[in-house]
Image 1 (tube, rainbow, N blue to C red):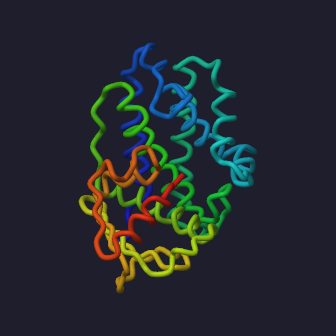
Image 2: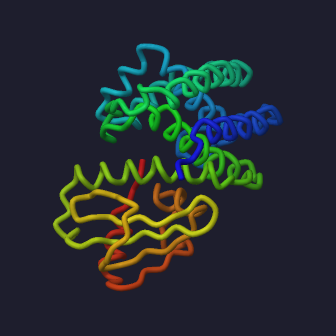
Amino acid sequence: MTPDRVAALCAERDLLLETCHSLTDRQWATPSRAEGWSVQDMVAHMGAGCRAIFTVDALKILRSNDIEKSNDMLVDQRRRRTPAQVLGEYERWSRRLIRLARVVDAGPLARIRLPLAELGRFPVNLVLCSAMTFDHYTHLRHDIAPALGLPPPPSEANTVAVVLEWMLAVLANQLKAAVHPWLEAPLRINLTGPGGGSWTVQPDGAVTTQPGAAAAEITASALEFPEWSTRRVDWRQRDVTVSGDTGYGERFLDAVNIV
């Protein structure tokens, strides 16, 4: 079943706005869990990302060979702004992004593939909806909330499914682009809980939902996957188990670093 991508993005926008509208000036200035970025910088990043879709900045990001550096530059441009200005930009442009996403996700443009910096090529609807949902989801739960001592907001199954859709698409591109001579047999990734599922990683880097024999099986929580697969924590610090050829599975886990 295909997840509702626009609904997921709307839900994450609502959660971020709910959090931001309650922040004090001191909380806005608090260092986030992303090195070098405050909570305000994190929201500025998301606002800049939404606005970029409608400006020439989109071309800079799409053609970049270092998406992290491009993101840093956009945040640097906003460092003199007040929290109200940063939040205003985010609120205004995220609303416009959702309007665009509704049109694109339901229409013939959805499957057109676009390059996204060094991450590879993706259908337009994944870039507009799934990538932006992933950005909101991970930054709010793993960079902003813990920095402020706040509990992470709830994670709806549909949202988690959209986040995983994007992450596994990026993982497939990363595996195809890199040379991993040791990746010589299929692996199975089982992500349990709301929004989870099972995927097979092929030796050529393809990631599919097709079942089949696998040299190793990795089982983990769908809710924890975004944290350790982006290297915010080591996978060994979370509930991750490997069966079958454990050495092979662990080598794969050590190589995973989804941007």
